[in-house]
Length: 159
Image 1 (cartoon, helix red, strand yellow):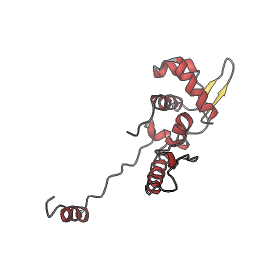
Image 2: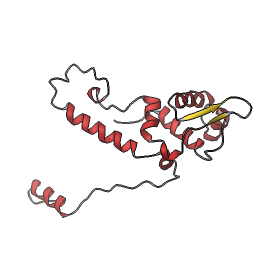
Image 3: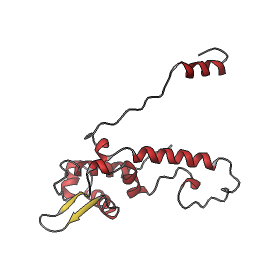
Image 4: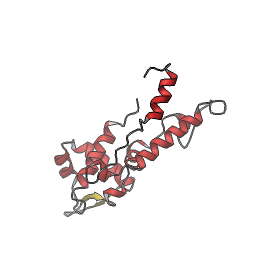
């Protein structure tokens, strides 16, 4: 099952919290209270996002965290990268493959194409879309007659 971790899910909630209002700095304690997540978890994720360049931080009495750029310019892929590392659904689809079968494998190229499609989809969704500040275009497959005719041919005329 392809699934993001709970930490990445929580991280998205934290970034969504920082996105509204984006010009204000929030302390880790404020974010924890607003999101109802444990303070140690919020602190850990904010540090990861800071290292990844997704948030900035200022120390002091008027300090806190805020997004480093508008929510529309932060992709779902960059959020996942900050917490889990780059998306790689198989060993050979990552940047640093260590698969012993890579030279003789006939499926690696297909998995790499699938991984690239997933990555492109994640790059195409922004934090603003994730937190409802912008609408997301809904993709619907084309179920026109040509698809149905092809399916009928394969099933002996039955749909």
